[in-house]
Image 1 (cartoon, rainbow, N blue to C red):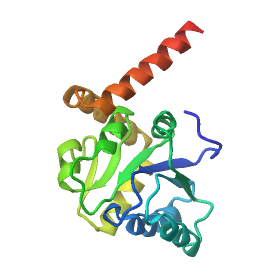
Image 2 (image 1 turned 135 degrees about the vertical axis):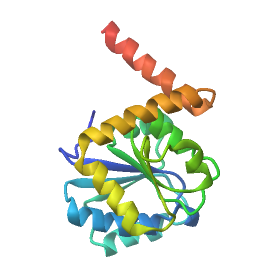
Image 3 (image 1 turned 90 degrees about the vertical axis):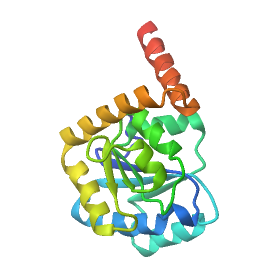
Length: 193
């Protein structure tokens, strides 16, 4: 678990397009509340898009420059490392047709807190592989993220359940196949050395 130099802080990870339906303003405002109750955490956002500057400014306005990192566009291989080093993946979208990133989080054995969009409901088993919360419900979103931050065993168990579920039900999806083969390469190389 290479922690990217964020010494012992827990990592909440999000990846996607910086666009209005991704509800990033909600995510940042929610993260402020999470951070107040659990200061040893950072939020990493991977991606770019038309709301990038707006979100960057909001980060400063909320006085969270040090705790929210905007990674910009991240190459696929590096993205896999971010999933791997994260503790929790979040997806508070307003709508999501099929949450490709949720499969990536699942196959990386990470628990998820997501809004209950059509796409998320297809992939997340509520209270088993993560938590589905009502769209735009800040209280529930914050509660569930804090619950996972404060309970390592629960987070780990949900992550493992997510891995098994995604591997079994979505192994035909290209991004799942890619990540599985990427891990296998790494493991094989590690054994060879």
